[in-house]
Image 1 (cartoon, rainbow, N blue to C red):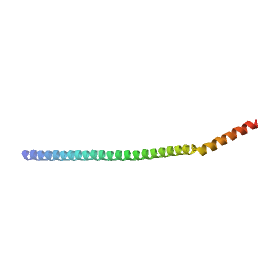
Image 2 (spheres, rainbow, N blue to C red):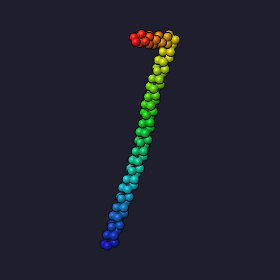
Image 3 (cartoon, helix red, strand yellow):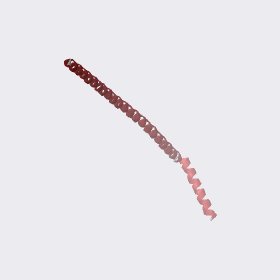
Image 4 (cartoon, helix red, strand yellow):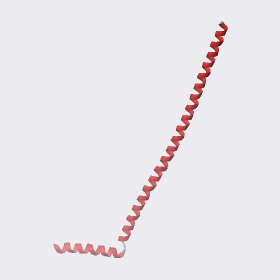
Length: 102
């Protein structure tokens, strides 16, 4: 009878060890899968952020270039011979009026 109890005890112990080993193994597999999923998600998120930031900076640079071009065009238009003559004429009139007023 004693031998039978020892065998039952050993069988229960083997079953308990097997159950614990299975739980630990499954936990490790789930942890590894979770870590891989988080790493993959992080990489995708970072890549998406880089693309969005690049697109925003590209749009910002386009706006700056457009502003610079408009400024240069405005100054270029002001430097045409006729425009310069008109501006000088107006400036001389203003100075002469100021001179004759005093």
